[in-house]
Length: 535
Image 1 (spheres, helix red, strand yellow):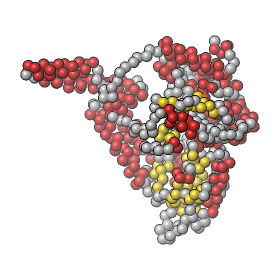
Image 2 (cartoon, one colour):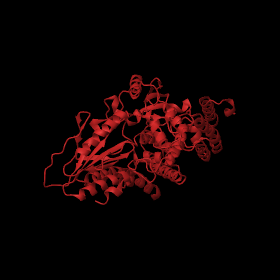
Image 3 (cartoon, rainbow, N blue to C red):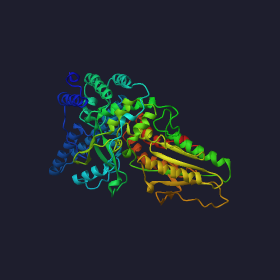
Image 4 (cartoon, rainbow, N blue to C red):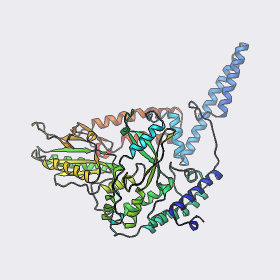
């Protein structure tokens, strides 16, 4: 019905999303409940009746002077609380057995008082939201759009592959973003399955025309503080909440792009590669370091941990030619170009929202953080940032970059030239180096001679040298010892043992306790364990 009414991708999508919104209102009931901050989830009608009986018995005992009924009612409250906790524990166990992970985790958080730290936002008002909205769009380019048709036309057409993938989905997952969330997550199974064909039509039409519907390009930016007490607009990270359906669409496109990339592309980029992870990136860095140190007594290694300023927000149109060079089809390059263009965004700070800001310049603001495709596009954007010397290595995991200099006979020229080459590459590709957060670490096991290391200068500023740096969750020290890392892991895990003890006191089944331990404690202790456990 919708497909026959129009061939315009945006109009077609708006009609479908509007109809889904109506189904939400008509088929999914809305229940309003009042919840108090001190209300425990196991407090039900039985416990409230016991509490009322205890209060009545107390008032009667004060008048009559006989408190026997009050003591009996107080014991009844304790018994009702024990029974209520037991019933709630059975409910959590049922959710665990039925894979109700979200409800289970919320219940465990309530029992253990497991809370995330406060956001630390500055005073939330509309003026702050407008200031952040303008600040997050500061990379808006003034140049005209590049010719998207310059991409290479090699490669097979992707349309049929996307369509079959979307059709095979059956049901579409959900995340926060738009009004379709409740329909896709809470609607009847038959209705959710019926949405798959029409969403497949939207995806196919979008890919065929090379146009992303405008409703899929709307973003609500939620500023997430980078530190506990932000004092500047740059202390916020812009996280974009986008359409639920668009996230599903991006997942399909991302999988197709990943499967189409040549296997030889940038072997030292460890993000979004099959059978690669952060463990591999750190293991390669350490293996290269130890191998070079073992080759000669006077060898040492310099590592420059590079930090980019708003890396995702500075992608420029040359990305399209890079995608074409990687063999992606022209139609797909055009679709990505349209995906990055003409996006609208507004900032929400608490209950305050800014006015909508329309970004109309092609590729001027890069890929929003929070989109599924953004990290992959950044990895493709930087695939040609490689080392130019045999004595230097550039290791990357998405935008986490390390420049390694394998120094022999105190000759650091190749390492310093590599840093200059990286700085020039960033200028050509519209990437900004954050010098204040770019740190240098030197691994030198020689103790007999004192060295005079040459300082690193970036944009006229001397880079800071540190004794330890946290890279991809692992603290790397200049002596390659792991005491700092293991101490930080033990401290973090020890703090969460309190929550496990609370669950044990609640008499939850051992299966639930093991699951909580595995998710919140063991995952910390075993993170990247393959690179540091040998010590």
